[in-house]
Image (cartoon, rainbow, N blue to C red):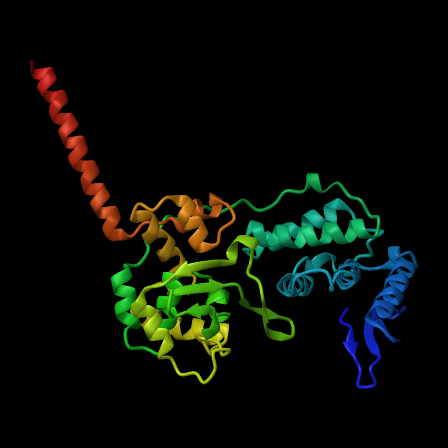
Length: 350
């Protein structure tokens, strides 16, 4: 629920009142003198309507109602993900009334989605929202009985060489943006959220505290990052700071990267695809963390620079290896074992 101020100074919001007998959604507009009054009236209406014929709701309607009642309390990106789940997941049980829903119906829906090649994580996300929605309406099923698709292990792949990637980016319109992402070990939303005012040219310090997000209503910016530890200050090289300073801008309040997420990703992907390299922009963050790890930097400092809360994801996802380093390590292993085998053979011959 979004509360907006009207031109006459009053505050107004529209809330969902459920569905009529034909399945059509019913909405009600609330208008009051203050935001607090609008919220209070809305809370009372929502509380009263939950018990009215809630058992007659379908699975889809129940999930819509559950998300609608919490729309002011959850992140815009989470809200977008929830709405996508409602649109695309658990299609075979969407029209089943929640009072008639059985655990075997949910298992069949999972089985159907598994046959479509959906991952375990995707399926579980849909079922988790369903479980929360059902519990909201006092429908309690034993979800522990459910079986999900197995995780498919991803094959270990070497990262592209840094020199090769940045040689391809040299002289392009996104060269500085990618260098900034790499040097700051940043997520794409963090790069897009940076303003010129976030960079101190004297100390070469960059303050990362804002991110660009995609919501149901389009592009938005929020003045905080993915986790509390993602808000951080890092130091950049004098050369990169000078490159950023020279980027076209008329105000320090402008964004350093004047592109949308899609535009930046597309430009990067086009360059990489032409040269047979992986196209995901997020790979820059992996390369950054892996380069720091390979240099011998302790994990606790890499955690800070990249804004990770724990080292679980860092170790399992980001600390990959470059092919050149892997070849060197393999050669070192061969030499090591050759030396050991030689010692063994000498001892045996004696």
